[in-house]
Length: 345
Image (cartoon, rainbow, N blue to C red):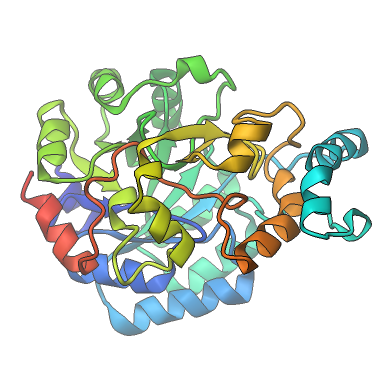
């Protein structure tokens, strides 16, 4: 079965869910063009998620994907928090921030019963997960209305694990991909492969469709992925400059600058490895910092620093998520980009 038949779409193109830089607008545009638009829900509260889902349902009757994190929430660690605030304290002083008023806590919650309740109101055709899968009872609830389930694998072992849990398709996320790594069976970044090394190995190892992700920004990249056995392609970075994306002016400028040529995996923004354009805080504290608390606890202490810097039109303390290949980033409508990518299929 083709990925189009499986997901009910016309084009084998999936728009990557990109928390923080997009909402319903981008998802609608891609779905209406025949691809699979995606709504990232990992940073949305319950009412915000309901509002976005209602907006999608009001403007398209085509399939769309909703995406969630399913990490294990860490226990707060006062000692680790103190190390992190100590590492950030010179920056607090630079921007006049009182570190005694800096909050701690999680900014991203894993998929749970409340989110499942909201999804049941809308019955999206596809639900995808990052960092493995949620508990079986939650998966059963999602499957109850016929939704197809996708999840991300960054290694062959993760792909086999996901297949054993019954996912309908696997997103093979290469090392080039922007944003958070979906790694979940290990913390060893040396296990992470490039897209065109990873895809054929996963295709050979599993019997479900494989969706290639990472560094694919044009029709030639799509064609290469399909040649290696991918059933479809997930693209994220390529959509960052589309008018339907909520990408900030600071990030848009960074993507169009020479700085975008250098990206790195960093944990300083969230506590978990994610690829972004290298900026000051990544250079000075990382890119991988042992002081950063576990995901997603690192982000709270960074939030006031990021806000103060952005107010001064400075992106040196913001997560400028982007993959290694930004040449597909053009300021064209998302529908046009989706159709241009699909020419490679």
